[in-house]
Image (cartoon, rainbow, N blue to C red):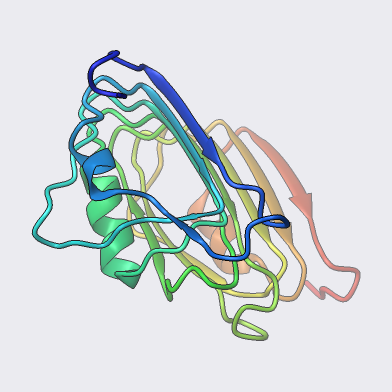
Length: 192
């Protein structure tokens, strides 16, 4: 139906309180969605089939909230690498996402919001790797005390919202030096 009707914006939200079994999206979502410009997925399990190609050639905005990735880290990398025009990415992780290191390598990305899943692996459990040289706006909400690695410089970074609860943010702050506007919220236990 998405393909036949040339749908440009698709929102799939599953009520997590009334649904006892996770909703698994069909593999066909990966291939029939060539016209999609905006995709929002909330509380679903992405199908994991390495034989099925993933293609979102027109996707510019992607929201992933409480998503399970059966293929783990590699599934996330493969999914995002097949979004060549992606400009806006919003990720709110869940405890069951099956991802150790959430890697965002998207050269076209301009806005990124990353929120961890509190207490997933205990203190220091969350991990983000970001390689987005076109990034202009960055928001990181890290209440689990994980780490974030920036693989390349982000010379276009204008605004950064950094929210750390458990650990010293020195590594991230040294990686976002070109930022013009910085919103920084730290734990009252932080010591500089």
